[in-house]
Every structure is written in structure tokens, then in C-alpha cells.
Image (cartoon, rainbow, N blue to C red; front, side, top):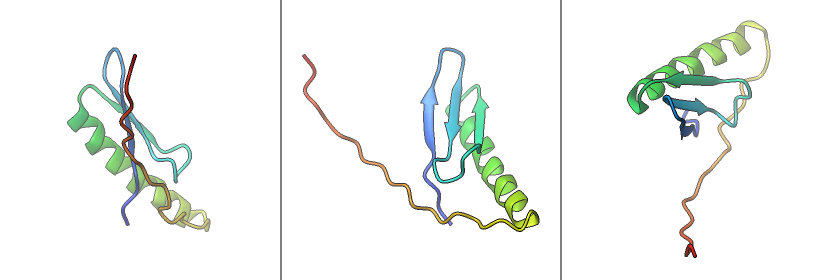
Length: 71
């Protein structure tokens, strides 16, 4: 499965979350680190859902980059 991940740069590093998996988050010092950590978090999150007998949400989020003219 392929889940959309939102990555945000903060003052001290990067954060990531998965809109289709509420509560699935990661933080790291670099973009590469947060990508590695969120992949692990997604796998762990899905394993937890399966063990709890809960359904695993299908990936459904999408993203677009919208260009606008800034004043």
C-alpha cells in the first residue's frame, strides 16, 4: 500500500503525519530521517490495528501543488 505522508519543516527539524492513519506521526532532525521514521511508524501502526482486530484504512488521501501569485 502507498499512503500519502505530509512532511513539515519546523524550527528544529521535520515532522510527518499520515492523514489516512490518525495518530501516525514521526519527527526527525532531517527530511531523510523523518521519512525513514514515518515508514516505520506506518508499519507499526498497521500491525497494531491488525492485532486489535480493527480495519486497516485504505489509502485515500491525495495531494496537489497549487501555484498562486503572491502580492
